[in-house]
Image 1 (spheres, rainbow, N blue to C red):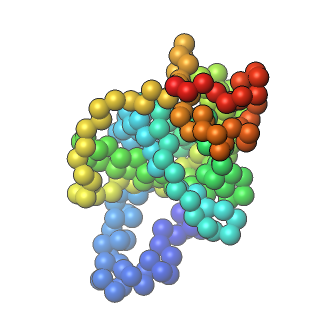
Image 2 (image 1 turned 90 degrees about the vertical axis):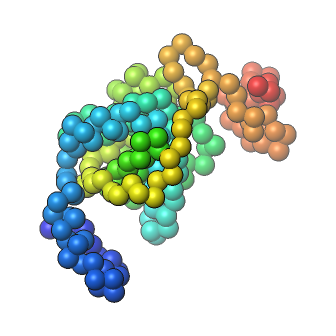
Image 3 (image 1 turned 60 degrees about the horizontal axis):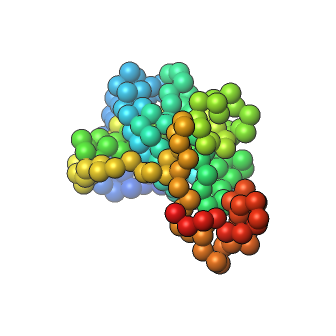
Length: 206
């Protein structure tokens, strides 16, 4: 991507300090791509989580964890991902950022069989995406167009075992429990009407 170089001056400065410029260039030539491989697709669609980095219009960063059932991040084609937005804390720090700065960074990690995949992409969010019908409980769909995708060394990934998928993840024919914090008195009057119950009171404790 000649109009969007992989490395900026700050990266080059540290590469030169550590004498890794040639290695960095070789890695870019060898492992960085602009489209998903079949292996990438399979890895992404078995992951139950992804870490999402965004920044606002002034380049102030934010990072969040997104979780769902395995396959909740869908590879639509060789350069497009789709990710559902489920009910959260309502701050919209990640998805609000992409309305003013569509650049995102994604990190997929397998902690049981150490592996990770990094993706840089351009994102857009919609409340009218036809994929909403495929994601019970989703509010928006975020589509991302890949700019770069590349694996990175897994040697520092701590090996962990997944014991249980979250009971709060939406799915067909299932009503997730109410998160405990939505029952706290300090938030009761600030909850949207859909979370207060018909009588305007706080939701029942789970």
